[in-house]
Image 1 (cartoon, rainbow, N blue to C red):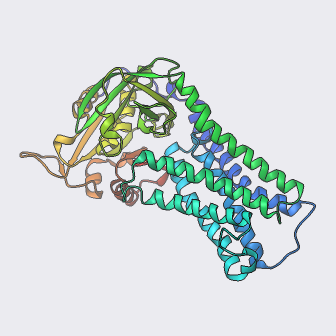
Image 2: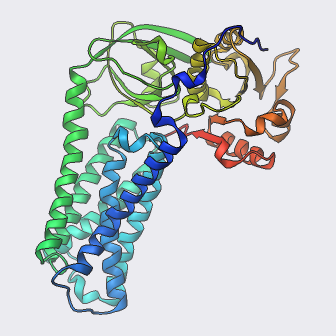
Image 3: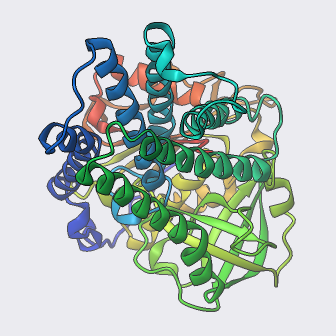
Amino acid sequence: MSKAPQLHQKPEKFIRTADHPAVVLLHAGFWLTAGFAVIALPFFVLLTGDFRPPPIGVLWDFSMGCGFAALSLTAIQFALTGRIRVLTSPFGADIVYVFHRFLSWGAVALMFAHFGVLYFWYEPALGVLNPLKARWELTLGRLALLCFAALIVTSELRKRVKLDYHWWRVIHVSLAVIGFAAAVAHVLGVGKYSAMEDTRSLWIGVTVVWVGFILWSRLVRPLVQTFNPWRVVSNEDEGGGVHTLTLRPEGRPLTAWRPGQFAWLSIGHSPWSMKEHPFTISTAPDRGPQISVSIKALGDDSGRLIKTQPGAVAYVDGPFGTFSIDREAAAEGFVMVAGGVGITPVIANLHALQSRKDPRPVILIYANATLDVVAFRDELDRIAQDIDLTIVHVLEEVPDGWTGETGRIDEAVLERHLPDRSRSWPHMLCGPAPMTGAVIKALRKMGVSARQIDLEVFDMV
């Protein structure tokens, strides 16, 4: 179903300089270089300092290198999770959080390598393991290792053991803060590589920056949000268990957000409570200053949020994310693939195309279990009356008389509905990981280049 509009505005009108591909690449390159520089800085200071400890052995130096690299990587984690917009903008906050997850594994692996080499080849350097008899700085090093190991385990097993999201965040932050403080104290306390003035200054400087990140994320940002509350003005049932909450700013509104971006939302709690969740802003930017977020009860706090009554106070931190048509000014059309509640960032982009009367064709392939749980079904049909939108529903269980696609989105479904000319269009995917993984594999087999596939991470936390 499609209908091309009679009037349209040039998409270039809505594109900012920051979204130009060359600017994005330059910005990303800067932050990647800065990250490598942070990791290399301790080694540069050690190698160029006025004092270097006499060499003991290759394995010893390897162990020390692992320890310093682990501490540098750990320091970077606080920047990655600090929701610093200038840092996340070239990559997308969702991708940065995924990167944080894998980088954390690497940091902990380096910590175990640091300890393991000493334990098997230089055991006397470790002293006794009993914390009641061991030197304090060595005990703090082991405490740091246990904290970061526990942090990884609780994060990976959170859903399996059904650990409440709020308490997981409290545990996560507590372990990270205690672990990093213990690690820095361990380095300064051992003193072998931090006795000279420049290396001691380095780790004191790292500690100051780390404290700055903590103060920003746990004190300054909540304080700013306190003075900029929002008010829920409506709660609409979109079908399929999805509810759209519309919020009105009672302080400073969000400015210049892109279609498809998301914000962290807290309703019924203060911004200090660590009970906020990321949700897509489903409103087109030119429909502000009110914003809407669409929520489906998937566990944790979302079941409570969909029951929010108008008048409730909310706090919003955003916008974040790069899953936006504004990143694709030169695109001739768009392929969008959504699964379940993954439709929310897609609907935000479609709303923007509708508001702008954009003439470019869009093919939406939308997977759901049954027709009854299709969210925004009527809204999608209304949008298709205004823009050149083709909607392909894919259902696992079909009603009587259904003539559309059945089963799951696979290469055969994609081949039937995506014309050859669409291979060069941006392909925007959002949905459960098994679905997006299968779609990416199918698209690559069909000749779609990796750079034409944009994935919004469905479950970031």
